[in-house]
Length: 438
Image (cartoon, rainbow, N blue to C red; front, top):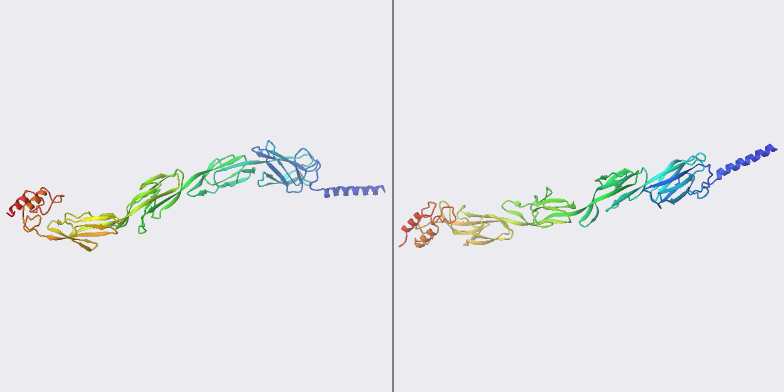
């Protein structure tokens, strides 16, 4: 009977113990011999008052380590770091010798710790997890990531978008970064990858960039060649625009002349407006703006005689004249070549006769051809220099006014060269004097 009662009591005891384990709540206060561990979260640099939280990912409980073993357990716990940048917790699990936890620092993405070892009997191991602060500085854009705490060993790719903060004719371009700690000391790109294992910083560097437009006015679509050269590259009449770094220097040149058709039409540079007033210049960028080359249209005026090659020649000689300008044409009334003498008849402008007008005004609204037409003159009698039909002292006076001139000299007058020897001298006076009308 006693043996039976003993067996009943033993069964009740076993059932009670089993029920205790089976019904013991996950967050129940553990006994000293239950598997557990201390968890330390250390910040670098040491900053107090930073929020730190731990959540259980496996069955078990966690509480802020406050020296008491008997209360405050739950599925998660949070506190703030002390003056040494430390937050301490105690973790307990009913069954098993490892635990899975999740740690969050100051709202940053959580770090999951799997398989953290627990004590076997009485001894509670201490696990320290370090978070490092990454300081991110940038005058422009919104860098990724922003400043924050990162778990030791976290792989980070820091980056910015460049250019940034464009407003009107100014924007900012990233020239690279400078770093400390786990960040490479410097670089020229817009991204850098590193693994954080110490308190670190990254500063993104920027330079102002200005929008500069190179353009022209006055050049028509009939010219398709190079109008301007910028930093050694040729551009047509459409010009070009660039974002240039602050204080950078750039060269430009406006070409001239721009010939559409030889001896017909061309464009000529007149002035430059905007960031320079020169045809060729080097500018140092300090603001946004434009550089515009202004051109005018010129047409070619062809001037010749019929017969060709007579002297003295009409004025002006053939050449380029501004569009819509007025040109005064003047033809000598008497001209000659090596063999004959000629007198003015009329002008022909683009084939149209303009009679009895040795001097005229021509409107250059396009390319023009002006031909002064002459007819041959026969001097009879010889010595009749003024062609009035008789030889008088008036003819002698004309010869004297050209005395000493030789052919092709400005003062040479072929009618005064009575003996046609190419110079006006005493022989011409003597010959004329013999023919004087008494």
